[in-house]
Amino acid sequence: MKLFARKGFYHTTIPLLAKELKMSVGNIYNYFPSKMSLAKSAVRFASGILASSLHRINEKDITAKEKIYLFVQDYLEIIQKSPEVIEFFLRVYLANRDLFEEDEDGGFRLAEAFVQEVEVLLQYGIRHYEFRKNQDFFISFSVLTGVLGAFTFLAGENVLEKEVASYSKEIADAIYRGLA
Image 1 (cartoon, helix red, strand yellow):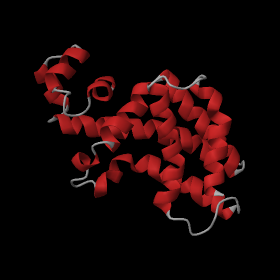
Image 2: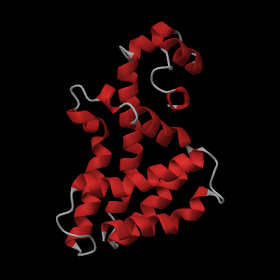
Image 3: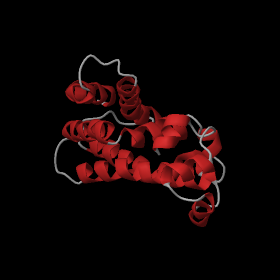
C-alpha cells in the first residue's frame, strides 16, 4: 500500500513491489496473478480496517453523534499511525475507480464492508431521529467520507496548522450537522 500510495497505480510495477517486499517477481505471482488483483486485495484490506473500526462503534448503544465522533477519532488515528492505508484508498482506489469497476458493481463491492457499516450508521441515525429521513445514500456517504478525505489530503500535504487529531471534534460536528 505504501508503494501504491506513493507512486500511484500506473507507476507501481511488479518488479518495484517485489523489491519493496524483498521477494522475487515470480513469488509475487504465486500469490497474485496480476498487479490489479494485488491492488484489489489491498483495497479490500484498507476497507476492512475502516469497516472494523466503524463496526465496533456501531455496536455501541450511544447516539449517532457520539458514533461519528468516535469514528472520526479512529480515522484520524489511522491517518497518523498508518497513513498508507488511507492514502492508498484515496489515491489509488478512488482516483482510479474506472480500473476497479469491471465486474465489481461500479467498484463498490471492493469496499463493501465499509459501505455497509456506513449504511448501518446512517440508518441508526435516522431511526433515532438524529438524521434527516430520505437522504440520498451517496450524498450522506460523501458528507462523511468527503470531509475525512479532505483532512487526509491536508494532513498528507502538511498544511494543517495543528496536529490532524486536534481537529476531531470540529470534523465530527461538521459531519453531524451535514447529516442532521
